Image (cartoon, rainbow, N blue to C red; front, side, top):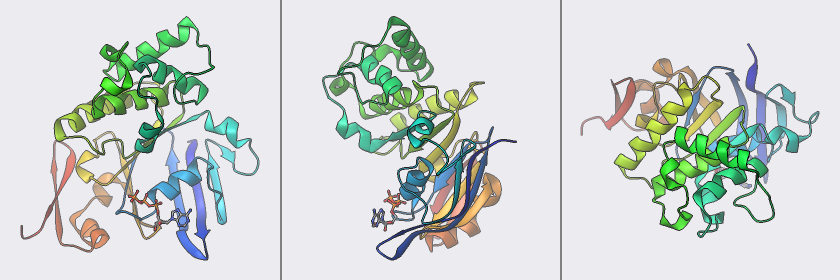
Length: 262
Ligand SMILES: Nc1ncnc2c1ncn2[C@@H]1O[C@H](COP(=O)(O)OP(=O)(O)OP(=O)(O)O)[C@@H](O)[C@H]1O
């Protein structure tokens, strides 16, 4: 099998402090992973390593079969879609929905000097259809709801047909109906034959769809547990991860957590 992500003994240090410690993590083609951890556990730092925005202090990072240090990182990034809610602030509110999606081709946020062709818009509309937000075409970004904005950003991330798609807290700020709607779109995306490998970063375990076959739990910048979701997302593991007595139950192949005793 081909590794999409292969991190070996990766540590990342800042101001003499280990932010990431001895991370070993391998993601194979055909797998989709959920990454879970409390605030400050190192999830974003880990994504920064995967996208080459941070360089491991020690260890080796091999992404999409390219070894860091031996590849033009800007070229490699064209194969990686990164959707972070922090992008929202950088978008021009008066930009049209389809322009935001098309801008993913250029790794720009919105269209300023780029000159997309008709076929680019055809592709954007196709992806918007797939993400169930085709009806937003012609609307400005400011008129879209939070959930619709997230769908547009994911569609933008798909525009360059990435091999790897990183979804960083895509559901933050959504009410549960908008969240379930977005998860349904992600589920539809994962089921596509040519779907990219998805890394889904979240604080909420109930968002871990059945399609995310594996999970990585981070604690204090280190791997706490990793592997098949059923083996990792257990009452015992999550009680120790959160240092709090919790209980995990599975409904419709999704894990749900509650405080024990409540
Ligand atoms: N450039 C940096 N310099 C110093 N410390 C940093 C830097 N980047 C991150 N950190 C620290 O590393 C720790 C992990 O941060 P990170 O943002 O990766 O966590 P996270 O799991 O993504 O958190 P959250 O869920 O709140 O987004 C935090 O304590 C943070 O303050």
